[in-house]
Image 1 (cartoon, rainbow, N blue to C red):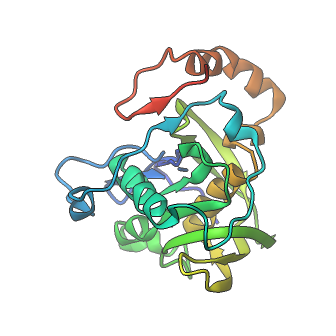
Image 2 (cartoon, helix red, strand yellow; image 1 turned 60 degrees about the horizontal axis):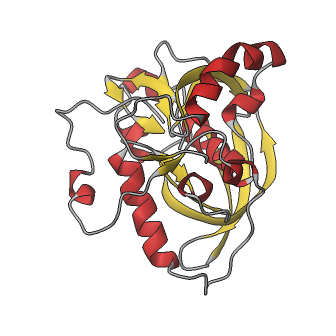
Length: 240
């Protein structure tokens, strides 16, 4: 898989990117969507809450999250709020630890990425039609394919972006919001978003994939984020 000529900004948690004229935020953030686009505008006009994003340095981001059961308190509301928070940040994914919940839950909408690829760019991601799914109690079965680099970022680590190598495919076992079990294989950009979000429920961050020297070079920026010395256009919670 070749590296795109432009970048994708995930929320993720964030991937920095621009594909086919589309800019977006992956929890892999992905850059911001242009004002003229109205993708998912209807989903921002409801009563759900936009939750504050937990900043780098908060202990919850380093915990291995726990599986949950269908009777987890207010789960339906939490999922709805996570979707709202993700779209409110122009994101394509967000994980529960990023909203201060140490549970194995994340949501992903990579359909918006695939839908805005130019036709020739779609050939770079064969078999990837994008997904819009809730992932609960996810566990990796296997990864495969050739590793490829892409420029990632994260809503919890604003204004820091670096190239990260990840596997081309990932097979997950998980349950959806109805606790129906699934075992599926994902590829391309969708696999990358899922792997980025999966890191969060395993207590990892995209910067953990960087070489030690690069991590040391980022230390002052990371320290500033932990101290709240950062300006962003979404709500954040900083370590105390």
